[in-house]
Length: 94
Image (cartoon, rainbow, N blue to C red):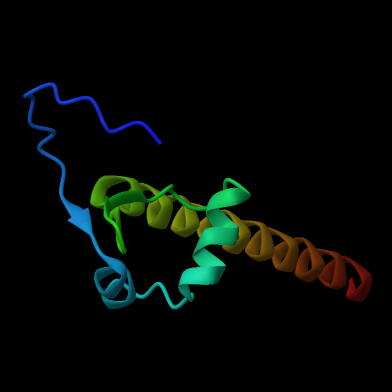
C-alpha cells in the first residue's frame, strides 16, 4: 500500500476510534463493522497506525441520521397502515 500523499492541508474533521463508536451506541464488533464496510453499509475506516483504525465523525453521524430517517419512514408507513385498517373497520361496522 502506498503511503498517503501529504498535502499540508488540514481536514478539520474529527476521528472516532472503536471505543468512541461504542459510546455513540454502535454495538457491533470490529469483525461485523468490517463486513458492513465491505457491503457498503457503514462508513469506511481509515488506518491511522499499524494496529489502529478510526472513522470520520461526520460520516458516522450521517450514517446514524440515515438510520433515524429510515426508522421515521417506517413509523409513518406503519401509522398510515394502521389508520387505513381502522378506517376500513369503521366502514364495515357502519
